[in-house]
Image 1 (cartoon, rainbow, N blue to C red):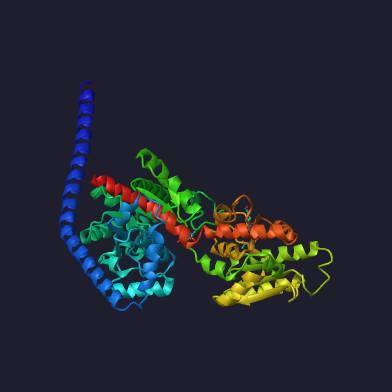
Image 2: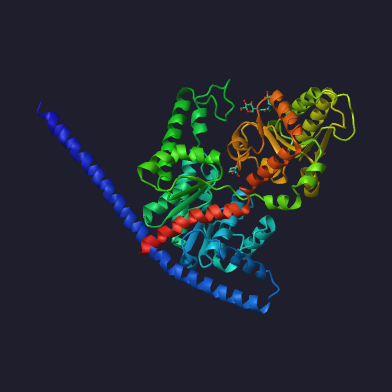
Length: 550
Ligand SMILES: *[C@@H]1O[C@H](CO)[C@@H](O)[C@H](O)[C@H]1NC(C)=O
Ligand SMILES: *[C@@H]1O[C@H](CO)[C@@H](O)[C@H](O)[C@H]1NC(C)=O
Ligand SMILES: *[C@@H]1O[C@H](CO)[C@@H](O)[C@H](O)[C@H]1NC(C)=O
């Protein structure tokens, strides 16, 4: 009998000892690792800042000697934002800190990189004295090569002196090939090596991850609790869909992992994913500012990170900062007024790659149904006022080409003649623009599109979108704006046919009003809006630094 209390006393004691030693080793680790990193990085910081100053001086000198370079452009840009600052007073225009951007694949030239460079440009405009340090693993490319590529690829011109590239030597730790098993966990833990690598190069005043390496941000908080952190999330590393998909049976599910939730393997896999999701949530709870690229991503991140963020009293909610789309070119090229309205043809335009999920066949069927419903039109084969369908899309390979062939057959079957339907494969930008200017309706038949940049382009051109009632088009794009609708949503063949009839039958003035609202909505995805939102969010981090220093 006496053994029991003694045993539980020992147990309690050992738990106490274990947790105490865990705490002590955490503190020790924190102290040693962070001391090491700080010490290594502080002298480097001085060197880096001195080099920036020198480069800036040289840049100013050469700018004053040759006023005909593009620097004039830069001056203009700088002035443009000097007055439009919406965070704090004049004083923090002068904010002179270092912002680390963690983006190990910065020279990749994809959508994620576009966001990175647009973000750096916005930062430079708002805080001209801040130094933007990009942690990258692209050793083969030097600073000016990368900046040149940014200019060519994205037409984004950065102010070179205040951009610094810090080269990581451990990027292979985040390649999926390094971790054939437990890839998610391996890559995430591997990213911590990169974080160590990064901080030994420089410990910045603000640290932002723009590639989705949340564990890196957690490491930053662990070592340097006072450095504010930000994340721009394109895609959750693990999504609630993935966790759900394991439970779906193969007959029902169309997810990648549907049905693999069975048996011992399935059980273990499920456990592993849940453990990982749990870790990911804790990690996300440490980030000060979280931006996401769409409502879809935001809702997943809120589900995963929200509870921990609330518990840790993170004051700033997960926000949506849409990546900048090039809507201005379209807006500037296409007028929107009574004359242009009179010139538009009753055409339904669908711009999409000829891929199966774009569901062109649904559009053909619903368009045929619509024609049939317009008594009198069906018989007429030509002449002005005949509604038309125009399909523009790129053909990547033989299977796309086959799909176009099949669609032509389908059109024939549905009695759609070349007067009713036009296929344009691999159109140039001017051709696309002329169709955007001439058509009336922009269609999108894909189900659950994450975003739908094509729909934004329709709106920018003043087309009235008719889209599937799902995904990004539903949540983010075709939403009420300035007191009215900006397009229509449909879910069935009949639904699309009815919406086409509705738009083409609208009173001209009402239709023009809707086009204008649609264009207004498209502006929300423009570069200016991106800059505003980015600066708002990063402004909070700058304030946190200022508060720390008080
Ligand atoms: C957000 O990022 C994901 C992953 O890169 C991408 O598929 C999606 O289209 C992006 N959303 C927007 C609004 O660009
Ligand atoms: C296309 O749409 C029809 C009608 O909604 C649907 O039955 C079909 O599954 C869709 N096809 C694809 C590939 O999404
Ligand atoms: C369109 O969206 C609805 C959900 O609103 C869905 O049930 C339907 O299958 C989708 N249609 C297509 C063509 O994918």
